[in-house]
Length: 477
Image (cartoon, rainbow, N blue to C red; front, top):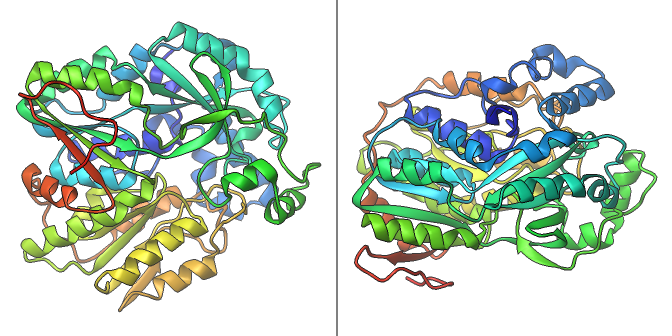
Protein backbone atom coordinates (compact mmCIF):
# COMPACT_ATOMS: atom_id res chain seq x y z
CA UNK A 1 0.00 0.00 0.00
CA UNK A 2 1.56 3.31 -1.10
CA UNK A 3 2.10 5.73 1.85
CA UNK A 4 0.83 8.65 -0.21
CA UNK A 5 -2.52 6.86 -0.40
CA UNK A 6 -2.52 6.07 3.32
CA UNK A 7 -1.85 9.47 4.88
CA UNK A 8 -4.63 12.08 4.78
CA UNK A 9 -3.95 15.07 2.52
CA UNK A 10 -6.50 17.14 4.47
CA UNK A 11 -4.60 16.93 7.78
CA UNK A 12 -2.53 19.61 9.50
CA UNK A 13 0.75 17.64 9.51
CA UNK A 14 0.49 16.69 5.83
CA UNK A 15 -0.39 20.23 4.76
CA UNK A 16 2.50 21.65 6.77
CA UNK A 17 4.95 19.04 5.46
CA UNK A 18 3.96 19.87 1.91
CA UNK A 19 4.14 23.65 2.41
CA UNK A 20 7.60 23.52 4.00
CA UNK A 21 9.09 20.95 1.64
CA UNK A 22 7.90 22.87 -1.41
CA UNK A 23 9.39 26.04 0.08
CA UNK A 24 12.75 24.31 0.56
CA UNK A 25 12.55 23.22 -3.09
CA UNK A 26 12.03 26.89 -4.02
CA UNK A 27 8.31 26.59 -4.79
CA UNK A 28 5.02 27.96 -3.57
CA UNK A 29 1.88 25.93 -2.84
CA UNK A 30 -0.56 26.27 -5.77
CA UNK A 31 -3.31 24.43 -3.90
CA UNK A 32 -2.88 25.49 -0.27
CA UNK A 33 -3.26 22.63 2.18
CA UNK A 34 -3.65 19.86 -0.41
CA UNK A 35 -1.20 17.61 -2.19
CA UNK A 36 -1.28 16.15 -5.69
CA UNK A 37 -2.84 12.94 -4.39
CA UNK A 38 -5.87 14.93 -3.35
CA UNK A 39 -6.43 16.58 -6.71
CA UNK A 40 -8.75 13.99 -8.21
CA UNK A 41 -11.12 13.35 -5.24
CA UNK A 42 -11.22 17.03 -4.41
CA UNK A 43 -11.85 18.25 -7.95
CA UNK A 44 -15.57 18.80 -7.41
CA UNK A 45 -15.13 20.42 -4.03
CA UNK A 46 -12.50 22.82 -5.30
CA UNK A 47 -14.29 24.06 -8.37
CA UNK A 48 -15.86 27.48 -8.23
CA UNK A 49 -19.22 25.89 -8.93
CA UNK A 50 -19.05 23.91 -5.68
CA UNK A 51 -19.91 26.99 -3.65
CA UNK A 52 -23.13 27.39 -5.62
CA UNK A 53 -24.42 23.91 -4.85
CA UNK A 54 -27.28 23.49 -2.36
CA UNK A 55 -26.03 23.06 1.20
CA UNK A 56 -26.75 19.33 1.40
CA UNK A 57 -25.02 18.50 -1.88
CA UNK A 58 -22.06 20.66 -0.97
CA UNK A 59 -21.62 18.93 2.38
CA UNK A 60 -21.90 15.48 0.79
CA UNK A 61 -19.31 16.39 -1.86
CA UNK A 62 -16.91 17.56 0.85
CA UNK A 63 -17.39 14.39 2.90
CA UNK A 64 -16.96 12.22 -0.22
CA UNK A 65 -13.63 13.91 -0.99
CA UNK A 66 -12.26 12.72 2.34
CA UNK A 67 -13.90 9.30 2.15
CA UNK A 68 -12.16 8.68 -1.20
CA UNK A 69 -8.80 9.01 0.57
CA UNK A 70 -9.62 6.68 3.46
CA UNK A 71 -8.05 3.25 3.89
CA UNK A 72 -10.51 0.32 3.93
CA UNK A 73 -10.83 -1.14 7.42
CA UNK A 74 -9.55 -4.57 6.39
CA UNK A 75 -6.29 -3.10 5.01
CA UNK A 76 -5.20 -1.17 8.10
CA UNK A 77 -3.06 -4.03 9.43
CA UNK A 78 -0.99 -3.90 6.25
CA UNK A 79 0.28 -0.36 6.87
CA UNK A 80 3.98 -0.15 7.79
CA UNK A 81 5.55 2.71 9.71
CA UNK A 82 8.86 2.45 7.87
CA UNK A 83 7.18 3.21 4.57
CA UNK A 84 5.40 6.19 6.13
CA UNK A 85 8.72 7.59 7.39
CA UNK A 86 10.37 7.16 3.99
CA UNK A 87 7.42 8.96 2.41
CA UNK A 88 7.95 11.90 4.79
CA UNK A 89 11.69 12.26 4.20
CA UNK A 90 11.21 11.87 0.45
CA UNK A 91 9.55 15.28 0.36
CA UNK A 92 12.77 17.16 1.17
CA UNK A 93 15.79 18.15 -0.93
CA UNK A 94 19.17 16.66 0.01
CA UNK A 95 21.26 19.45 1.48
CA UNK A 96 23.08 20.39 4.67
CA UNK A 97 21.52 22.48 7.43
CA UNK A 98 22.64 23.96 10.74
CA UNK A 99 19.38 22.95 12.37
CA UNK A 100 16.48 20.54 11.94
CA UNK A 101 13.20 20.12 13.79
CA UNK A 102 11.30 16.99 14.79
CA UNK A 103 8.07 16.54 16.76
CA UNK A 104 4.73 18.29 17.03
CA UNK A 105 2.95 19.90 14.09
CA UNK A 106 2.68 23.67 14.40
CA UNK A 107 2.02 26.30 11.73
CA UNK A 108 4.15 29.00 13.37
CA UNK A 109 7.03 26.52 13.63
CA UNK A 110 6.74 25.93 9.86
CA UNK A 111 7.39 29.64 9.29
CA UNK A 112 10.36 29.43 11.67
CA UNK A 113 11.74 26.54 9.61
CA UNK A 114 11.17 28.49 6.38
CA UNK A 115 13.08 31.49 7.71
CA UNK A 116 15.98 29.20 8.67
CA UNK A 117 15.86 27.01 5.57
CA UNK A 118 15.46 24.02 7.92
CA UNK A 119 13.44 20.79 7.60
CA UNK A 120 10.86 19.40 10.04
CA UNK A 121 9.99 15.74 10.56
CA UNK A 122 6.50 15.19 12.00
CA UNK A 123 5.97 12.77 14.87
CA UNK A 124 2.24 12.45 14.08
CA UNK A 125 0.42 11.50 10.88
CA UNK A 126 -3.29 10.98 10.21
CA UNK A 127 -4.50 7.76 8.61
CA UNK A 128 -8.18 8.06 7.65
CA UNK A 129 -9.90 4.67 7.98
CA UNK A 130 -13.06 3.95 6.00
CA UNK A 131 -16.02 2.47 7.86
CA UNK A 132 -19.82 2.48 7.58
CA UNK A 133 -22.89 2.58 9.77
CA UNK A 134 -21.71 4.84 12.59
CA UNK A 135 -23.61 8.01 13.49
CA UNK A 136 -21.24 10.97 14.03
CA UNK A 137 -22.69 11.54 17.52
CA UNK A 138 -21.95 7.99 18.69
CA UNK A 139 -18.20 7.76 19.34
CA UNK A 140 -18.71 4.69 21.53
CA UNK A 141 -19.92 2.81 18.45
CA UNK A 142 -17.03 4.17 16.39
CA UNK A 143 -14.57 2.59 18.81
CA UNK A 144 -16.48 -0.69 18.87
CA UNK A 145 -16.39 -0.96 15.07
CA UNK A 146 -12.71 -0.07 14.70
CA UNK A 147 -10.94 -1.41 17.82
CA UNK A 148 -9.83 -4.61 16.08
CA UNK A 149 -8.30 -2.66 13.17
CA UNK A 150 -6.52 -0.37 15.63
CA UNK A 151 -4.98 -3.35 17.40
CA UNK A 152 -3.89 -4.83 14.08
CA UNK A 153 -2.12 -1.57 13.24
CA UNK A 154 -0.15 -1.28 16.49
CA UNK A 155 0.66 -5.01 16.55
CA UNK A 156 2.22 -4.71 13.09
CA UNK A 157 4.08 -1.51 14.06
CA UNK A 158 5.67 -1.72 17.54
CA UNK A 159 7.22 1.73 17.09
CA UNK A 160 3.81 3.47 16.87
CA UNK A 161 1.20 4.64 19.36
CA UNK A 162 -2.33 5.00 17.99
CA UNK A 163 -4.32 8.04 19.11
CA UNK A 164 -7.74 7.44 17.60
CA UNK A 165 -9.72 10.70 17.55
CA UNK A 166 -13.43 11.40 17.09
CA UNK A 167 -14.62 15.01 16.99
CA UNK A 168 -18.27 15.33 16.01
CA UNK A 169 -18.11 19.07 16.53
CA UNK A 170 -15.42 20.14 14.06
CA UNK A 171 -15.00 17.01 11.88
CA UNK A 172 -18.69 16.13 11.61
CA UNK A 173 -18.80 15.79 7.83
CA UNK A 174 -15.62 13.74 7.50
CA UNK A 175 -16.25 11.27 10.33
CA UNK A 176 -19.62 10.28 8.90
CA UNK A 177 -17.73 7.70 6.82
CA UNK A 178 -14.33 7.35 8.45
CA UNK A 179 -12.36 7.10 11.66
CA UNK A 180 -9.32 9.26 12.40
CA UNK A 181 -6.29 7.10 13.25
CA UNK A 182 -3.52 9.46 14.32
CA UNK A 183 -0.25 7.59 14.77
CA UNK A 184 2.73 8.88 16.74
CA UNK A 185 6.23 7.46 16.60
CA UNK A 186 7.54 6.40 20.01
CA UNK A 187 10.79 5.14 18.45
CA UNK A 188 12.73 7.06 15.83
CA UNK A 189 12.24 5.35 12.43
CA UNK A 190 15.31 4.40 10.41
CA UNK A 191 14.38 6.79 7.58
CA UNK A 192 14.36 9.72 10.03
CA UNK A 193 17.76 8.69 11.44
CA UNK A 194 19.32 8.41 8.00
CA UNK A 195 17.83 11.67 6.81
CA UNK A 196 19.03 13.61 9.86
CA UNK A 197 22.54 12.13 9.61
CA UNK A 198 22.73 13.23 5.96
CA UNK A 199 21.38 16.68 6.77
CA UNK A 200 23.03 17.80 10.03
CA UNK A 201 26.79 18.31 10.38
CA UNK A 202 28.64 17.84 13.69
CA UNK A 203 27.84 20.74 16.01
CA UNK A 204 24.45 21.34 14.41
CA UNK A 205 21.27 21.58 16.48
CA UNK A 206 18.37 19.13 16.54
CA UNK A 207 15.25 20.81 17.95
CA UNK A 208 12.47 18.79 19.57
CA UNK A 209 9.11 20.53 19.03
CA UNK A 210 7.34 19.65 22.27
CA UNK A 211 3.69 20.68 22.53
CA UNK A 212 2.62 19.66 26.03
CA UNK A 213 -1.13 19.79 25.37
CA UNK A 214 -2.98 16.81 26.86
CA UNK A 215 -6.55 15.51 26.54
CA UNK A 216 -8.80 12.98 28.30
CA UNK A 217 -8.66 9.54 26.66
CA UNK A 218 -9.98 6.00 26.96
CA UNK A 219 -7.42 3.18 26.97
CA UNK A 220 -8.59 0.97 24.11
CA UNK A 221 -5.68 -1.50 24.14
CA UNK A 222 -1.88 -1.71 24.18
CA UNK A 223 -0.53 1.51 22.62
CA UNK A 224 -4.06 2.48 21.54
CA UNK A 225 -5.98 5.36 23.12
CA UNK A 226 -9.31 6.83 22.06
CA UNK A 227 -9.79 10.62 22.22
CA UNK A 228 -13.29 12.07 22.16
CA UNK A 229 -13.21 15.70 21.05
CA UNK A 230 -10.34 18.02 20.26
CA UNK A 231 -9.14 21.58 20.92
CA UNK A 232 -11.25 24.23 19.23
CA UNK A 233 -14.59 25.83 19.93
CA UNK A 234 -16.02 23.35 22.46
CA UNK A 235 -14.40 22.74 25.84
CA UNK A 236 -13.35 19.32 27.20
CA UNK A 237 -16.19 19.65 29.70
CA UNK A 238 -18.73 20.16 26.89
CA UNK A 239 -17.48 17.06 25.11
CA UNK A 240 -17.83 15.11 28.35
CA UNK A 241 -21.03 16.49 29.87
CA UNK A 242 -22.78 18.32 27.03
CA UNK A 243 -24.52 21.61 27.72
CA UNK A 244 -26.72 24.23 26.06
CA UNK A 245 -24.33 24.93 23.19
CA UNK A 246 -23.87 21.23 22.43
CA UNK A 247 -27.61 20.49 22.62
CA UNK A 248 -28.39 23.39 20.28
CA UNK A 249 -25.71 22.27 17.81
CA UNK A 250 -27.00 18.68 17.73
CA UNK A 251 -30.58 19.90 17.36
CA UNK A 252 -29.63 22.09 14.38
CA UNK A 253 -28.04 19.10 12.65
CA UNK A 254 -31.04 16.84 13.21
CA UNK A 255 -29.26 14.49 15.60
CA UNK A 256 -31.32 12.14 17.78
CA UNK A 257 -28.89 12.96 20.62
CA UNK A 258 -28.50 16.04 22.81
CA UNK A 259 -25.06 15.06 24.09
CA UNK A 260 -22.42 12.67 22.81
CA UNK A 261 -22.43 8.97 23.63
CA UNK A 262 -18.74 8.34 24.21
CA UNK A 263 -16.58 5.73 25.98
CA UNK A 264 -15.78 7.10 29.44
CA UNK A 265 -12.30 8.58 29.77
CA UNK A 266 -9.97 6.77 32.17
CA UNK A 267 -6.85 8.92 31.87
CA UNK A 268 -5.00 11.61 29.92
CA UNK A 269 -2.56 11.45 27.05
CA UNK A 270 -0.71 13.81 24.69
CA UNK A 271 -3.38 15.43 22.51
CA UNK A 272 -3.86 13.42 19.32
CA UNK A 273 -3.18 16.08 16.69
CA UNK A 274 -0.86 18.55 18.39
CA UNK A 275 0.67 16.86 21.45
CA UNK A 276 4.19 15.40 21.65
CA UNK A 277 4.70 11.79 22.73
CA UNK A 278 7.80 11.86 25.01
CA UNK A 279 8.61 8.20 24.32
CA UNK A 280 10.53 9.47 21.29
CA UNK A 281 13.03 11.45 23.40
CA UNK A 282 15.52 8.68 24.30
CA UNK A 283 16.18 7.89 20.64
CA UNK A 284 16.64 11.58 19.82
CA UNK A 285 19.08 11.98 22.72
CA UNK A 286 21.09 8.96 21.61
CA UNK A 287 21.20 10.10 17.98
CA UNK A 288 22.30 13.63 18.92
CA UNK A 289 25.02 12.39 21.28
CA UNK A 290 26.36 9.90 18.73
CA UNK A 291 26.60 12.54 15.98
CA UNK A 292 27.92 15.43 18.07
CA UNK A 293 24.78 17.57 17.77
CA UNK A 294 23.28 19.93 20.28
CA UNK A 295 19.81 18.81 21.34
CA UNK A 296 17.31 21.59 22.05
CA UNK A 297 13.79 21.19 23.36
CA UNK A 298 11.24 23.87 22.53
CA UNK A 299 8.36 23.25 24.94
CA UNK A 300 5.04 25.10 25.02
CA UNK A 301 1.68 24.49 26.67
CA UNK A 302 -0.64 25.32 23.75
CA UNK A 303 -0.08 25.21 19.96
CA UNK A 304 -0.79 28.92 19.48
CA UNK A 305 1.81 29.97 22.07
CA UNK A 306 4.43 29.76 19.32
CA UNK A 307 2.53 32.16 17.03
CA UNK A 308 3.31 35.53 18.66
CA UNK A 309 6.95 34.50 19.10
CA UNK A 310 7.46 33.75 15.40
CA UNK A 311 5.45 36.81 14.35
CA UNK A 312 7.71 39.06 16.43
CA UNK A 313 10.82 37.28 15.15
CA UNK A 314 9.74 38.02 11.58
CA UNK A 315 9.06 41.68 12.42
CA UNK A 316 12.52 42.08 13.90
CA UNK A 317 14.08 40.28 10.92
CA UNK A 318 12.31 42.57 8.43
CA UNK A 319 13.36 45.68 10.32
CA UNK A 320 17.01 44.57 10.41
CA UNK A 321 16.79 44.19 6.63
CA UNK A 322 15.37 47.69 6.26
CA UNK A 323 11.90 46.47 5.25
CA UNK A 324 8.52 47.58 6.59
CA UNK A 325 7.05 45.16 9.15
CA UNK A 326 3.45 46.34 9.10
CA UNK A 327 1.79 43.69 6.88
CA UNK A 328 0.21 40.76 8.76
CA UNK A 329 -0.91 37.47 7.25
CA UNK A 330 -3.17 35.57 9.67
CA UNK A 331 -3.34 31.90 8.68
CA UNK A 332 -5.62 29.10 9.83
CA UNK A 333 -5.05 25.36 10.40
CA UNK A 334 -3.38 23.90 7.27
CA UNK A 335 -3.90 27.09 5.25
CA UNK A 336 -0.36 28.46 5.32
CA UNK A 337 2.02 29.58 2.61
CA UNK A 338 5.64 30.25 3.65
CA UNK A 339 6.75 31.17 0.12
CA UNK A 340 4.29 34.03 -0.39
CA UNK A 341 4.62 35.12 3.23
CA UNK A 342 8.26 35.96 2.59
CA UNK A 343 7.82 37.22 -0.97
CA UNK A 344 5.11 39.64 0.17
CA UNK A 345 7.07 40.74 3.22
CA UNK A 346 4.27 39.56 5.51
CA UNK A 347 4.44 38.80 9.21
CA UNK A 348 2.87 35.34 9.76
CA UNK A 349 0.45 34.69 12.61
CA UNK A 350 -0.89 31.13 12.66
CA UNK A 351 -4.18 30.07 14.29
CA UNK A 352 -5.12 26.50 15.16
CA UNK A 353 -8.63 26.82 13.71
CA UNK A 354 -11.48 29.19 12.81
CA UNK A 355 -12.94 29.31 16.33
CA UNK A 356 -13.54 31.92 19.00
CA UNK A 357 -10.47 30.89 21.08
CA UNK A 358 -8.20 31.27 18.04
CA UNK A 359 -9.74 34.63 17.21
CA UNK A 360 -9.13 35.70 20.82
CA UNK A 361 -5.50 34.61 20.47
CA UNK A 362 -5.04 36.77 17.36
CA UNK A 363 -6.87 39.71 18.95
CA UNK A 364 -4.69 39.45 22.04
CA UNK A 365 -1.60 39.61 19.88
CA UNK A 366 -2.86 42.69 18.05
CA UNK A 367 -3.63 44.35 21.39
CA UNK A 368 0.02 44.16 22.44
CA UNK A 369 1.79 44.62 19.10
CA UNK A 370 2.72 47.73 17.16
CA UNK A 371 -0.11 48.51 14.72
CA UNK A 372 -0.29 46.81 11.33
CA UNK A 373 -1.19 48.83 8.26
CA UNK A 374 -2.39 45.71 6.42
CA UNK A 375 -4.05 42.55 7.75
CA UNK A 376 -4.96 39.62 5.49
CA UNK A 377 -6.92 36.69 6.86
CA UNK A 378 -7.13 33.08 5.65
CA UNK A 379 -9.97 30.97 7.09
CA UNK A 380 -10.28 27.20 6.83
CA UNK A 381 -13.80 26.00 5.99
CA UNK A 382 -14.66 22.69 7.66
CA UNK A 383 -18.26 22.66 6.48
CA UNK A 384 -20.25 22.96 9.72
CA UNK A 385 -21.51 25.68 12.03
CA UNK A 386 -19.84 24.07 15.00
CA UNK A 387 -19.83 24.98 18.67
CA UNK A 388 -17.51 27.95 19.16
CA UNK A 389 -17.21 28.88 15.48
CA UNK A 390 -16.23 32.54 15.10
CA UNK A 391 -18.63 34.30 12.74
CA UNK A 392 -17.74 36.36 9.69
CA UNK A 393 -18.94 39.42 11.59
CA UNK A 394 -16.45 38.72 14.37
CA UNK A 395 -13.63 38.24 11.89
CA UNK A 396 -14.57 41.54 10.25
CA UNK A 397 -14.06 43.22 13.62
CA UNK A 398 -10.54 41.74 13.71
CA UNK A 399 -9.76 42.97 10.19
CA UNK A 400 -10.93 46.45 11.18
CA UNK A 401 -7.82 46.65 13.37
CA UNK A 402 -5.72 47.29 10.24
CA UNK A 403 -4.56 50.86 9.68
CA UNK A 404 -5.26 50.82 5.92
CA UNK A 405 -6.18 47.42 4.48
CA UNK A 406 -8.00 44.66 6.33
CA UNK A 407 -9.26 41.94 3.96
CA UNK A 408 -10.29 38.32 3.79
CA UNK A 409 -7.94 36.37 1.51
CA UNK A 410 -9.44 33.51 -0.45
CA UNK A 411 -12.65 33.59 1.61
CA UNK A 412 -16.15 33.67 0.14
CA UNK A 413 -17.90 35.19 3.14
CA UNK A 414 -21.32 34.16 1.83
CA UNK A 415 -20.34 30.49 1.66
CA UNK A 416 -18.23 30.25 4.85
CA UNK A 417 -17.90 27.81 6.65
CA UNK A 418 -18.75 25.77 3.52
CA UNK A 419 -16.35 27.69 1.31
CA UNK A 420 -14.53 24.65 -0.07
CA UNK A 421 -13.22 26.51 -3.11
CA UNK A 422 -11.19 28.69 -0.75
CA UNK A 423 -8.27 26.23 -0.79
CA UNK A 424 -7.48 27.17 -4.39
CA UNK A 425 -8.64 30.80 -4.17
CA UNK A 426 -6.33 31.61 -1.24
CA UNK A 427 -3.20 30.95 -3.29
CA UNK A 428 -4.43 33.03 -6.23
CA UNK A 429 -5.15 36.02 -4.03
CA UNK A 430 -1.82 35.81 -2.20
CA UNK A 431 -0.01 35.69 -5.52
CA UNK A 432 -1.74 38.94 -6.53
CA UNK A 433 -0.25 41.01 -3.71
CA UNK A 434 1.42 43.79 -5.63
CA UNK A 435 4.21 44.92 -3.30
CA UNK A 436 6.76 42.10 -3.11
CA UNK A 437 10.31 41.80 -1.83
CA UNK A 438 13.27 39.59 -2.82
CA UNK A 439 13.42 36.17 -1.17
CA UNK A 440 15.93 36.58 1.69
CA UNK A 441 18.92 34.44 2.56
CA UNK A 442 18.15 32.11 5.48
CA UNK A 443 18.18 33.61 8.96
CA UNK A 444 21.16 32.58 11.08
CA UNK A 445 20.24 29.91 13.62
CA UNK A 446 22.18 31.62 16.41
CA UNK A 447 20.04 34.75 15.98
CA UNK A 448 16.80 32.81 16.02
CA UNK A 449 17.74 30.64 19.00
CA UNK A 450 18.62 33.60 21.18
CA UNK A 451 15.28 35.22 20.35
CA UNK A 452 13.34 32.02 21.07
CA UNK A 453 15.13 31.29 24.35
CA UNK A 454 14.27 34.76 25.67
CA UNK A 455 10.50 34.43 25.21
CA UNK A 456 8.21 33.63 28.12
CA UNK A 457 5.76 31.69 25.91
CA UNK A 458 8.38 28.95 25.41
CA UNK A 459 10.60 26.87 27.66
CA UNK A 460 13.95 26.32 26.01
CA UNK A 461 16.23 23.49 27.14
CA UNK A 462 19.54 22.52 25.52
CA UNK A 463 22.08 19.72 25.76
CA UNK A 464 25.54 20.28 24.36
CA UNK A 465 27.33 17.56 22.34
CA UNK A 466 29.87 16.99 25.13
CA UNK A 467 27.23 16.59 27.84
CA UNK A 468 25.95 13.24 29.08
CA UNK A 469 22.76 12.31 27.22
CA UNK A 470 19.52 13.36 28.82
CA UNK A 471 17.22 16.31 29.08
CA UNK A 472 15.23 16.59 32.27
CA UNK A 473 11.51 16.31 31.97
CA UNK A 474 10.89 20.06 32.46
CA UNK A 475 13.79 21.92 30.81
CA UNK A 476 14.61 25.38 32.07
CA UNK A 477 16.44 28.29 30.52
